[in-house]
Image (cartoon, rainbow, N blue to C red; front, top):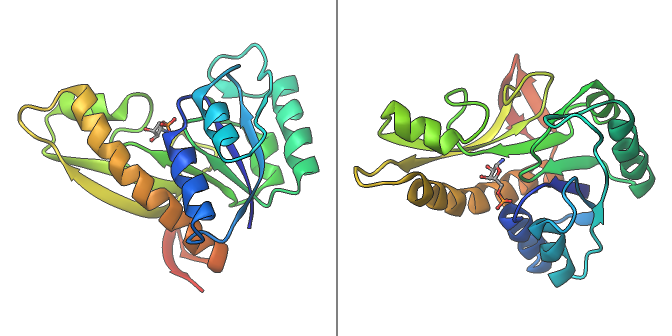
Length: 202
Ligand code: GRF
């Protein structure tokens, strides 16, 4: 599996993926590492593993990848030979152009048990709501926001003394387990759905 990783932040999920590839537990090759934030931590994580990251201007829209910015990403992704796009903290909504170029092959990780708490700062939403269990979800990306078919989830109990930061930190530990694991299943099989329910990867 040839993956392109895209992120905007510190890149701890990308690091977990690089590490799984390096230790031989994830049969994949990183063919592109892209960020919409110059000097983002994720680009430095790549450098630690000998992967050249690239900043690409995503254009004037702050919350989506569309128009000329989308085209710039598309050009690089298509030239890289990527068959799978892995979003690891990429803070823009993916629009039609990319979805059409990589049907059912764009994956995302979200810090809640979807469909609860889509959108930004999901761990804070969970804490404010008062749920006792939250978690993280790896899912395929579709036209909605955090609405695509679910590949893998892990639950995280919410403690009475949690802060947004402590809860997010425990969720991230689980993210780093399920993202490489879901990608391993994608790399070694093909997806079969019943409606939106994933029933098997052979
Ligand atoms: C993670 O919490 C992920 O769930 C969300 O963005 C964050 C990225 O963190 N989509 P990192 O850059 O991988 O550390």
